[in-house]
Image 1 (cartoon, rainbow, N blue to C red):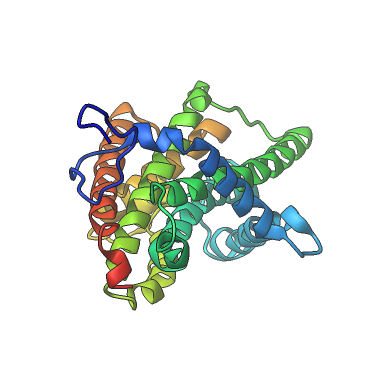
Image 2 (image 1 turned 45 degrees about the vertical axis):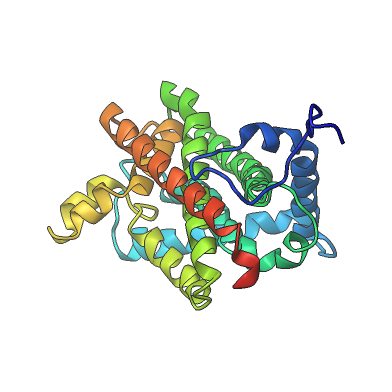
Length: 286
């Protein structure tokens, strides 16, 4: 090969820490779509109800929340039907949770393919985030059906014009879930017992993220020391804003949105930093 000739592509483990490598990721967009299709198909392959399984968890959880928190615990929902209130929060929470849990085991779950062929490793967690939009779409459609049902039966519900911000809220939930997932998967290459804590920590986080209650109730009924953990939790602001968009009740502020954007961006960049750093040598430690 002449010294004047250059390779079209160079595969090397030497990368800058903050190299997002967007150009190479875009070149592998066909592989990204292939992984997305695989994730969607395998989610309900060889099942009886297929994608209808995506509806069981949010509907059952909404029913339990309604019975326990609203009927027994007397949690108020600002005039919104409790079941619809819970379904809106769970729909948003489920998308974040799936993004987090499905990306938190990327290195260990894909170590065989990572050790045999090269492609941008970030393609795998990205495919999980995109594939989860399919599940979110089904759950949102079910929410719309219940919304129309309650409107038909005389409930006055009015979505906010902030509904136009839904793509932004989805992007923030995806960024936060992806960032946390990449941090966890980078750490589990050395500390495998962290995978056991993910499920427990995720369940605990749900109750600190204003999923079964509005922020107004948290300010009234929670102990003083606990209120900041809920109010300054970016997930609480996302879910509260998500419900405000869909139901027209709750709280929304530009400051909270900017704060959430900042936290989500920082965590995403931290996750990408650790992910890129770990992918160079993870095959020796997994």
